[in-house]
Amino acid sequence: MPKVKFDILESTCVPLPLQNIDTDQIIPARFLSATSREGFGENLFRDWRYKKTGEINKEFVLNNPKYNGKVLVAGKNFGCGSSREHAVWAIADYGFRAVVSSFFADIFMNNALNNGLLPIVISEDLLTNLQNIILKDPSAKVKIDLDKQTFTIIPTGDYVRFSINSYKKECLLKGLDDIDFLLSMKELITAYETKKTR
Image (cartoon, rainbow, N blue to C red):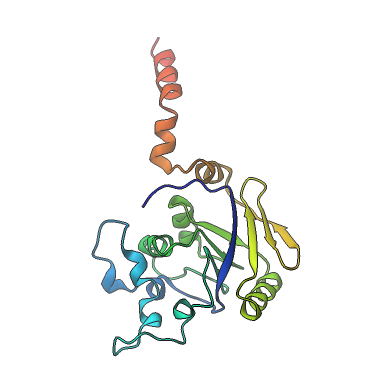
């Protein structure tokens, strides 16, 4: 999965106003055999996107052409269940850059930040308001400014500041994962080790 810097994102949203969406619903266990991060997006929410007959479920939001964008707006307690990192891979591979909810499971949140997907926590009231806005007007956009840590609903002007670990923020802004970050510090680490052994 290519590493992309995250700074300011302005996008329409995909509403998924369901609570307690677990990682098995995000990416069913039968699709976890692959070791590469690519290709998981085609099976994102597989059992909701397709009927048991294999037909496309036209009622599911990802199959509705009205809704698109790089921001998934989910219900409370998103990413609960098992700790599978594949859930984040599937969301990111599908094309989402951020997920908005009023609460994330801790492991999912850490997996998201480790894989370039930004989880944003907002209040339940604001989340409900946002979902209603999107459902009424699929063209409504939000603006995410990672550097300023602000989330804005453009049609109403409502905005909030969101929290993020400072190290993970820096990694997202620079498009780095943990290994890339360590490699970027190679000269400083070498200088420190050299000084330490004198």
